Length: 79
Image (tube, rainbow, N blue to C red; front, top):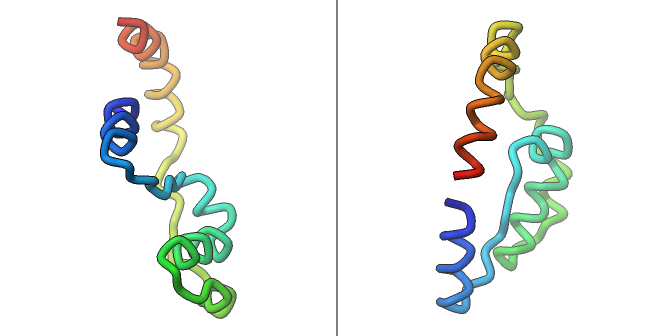
């Protein structure tokens, strides 16, 4: 699916801004600043943002499901 979007953007001459959830969580203000910069806005205002109200939503059950489904994901990705 990601390749399909990349091909679409390339064909349309669009350079999208790619964000990753993990990086947003790890470097919240920096990533918000990057978005603002991409939009042509003052990225320095991101440093004044309050801490995000993000909460970890996974637990041990998520890890078990991940390990259980990982082999199936490899088969699906190879298809």
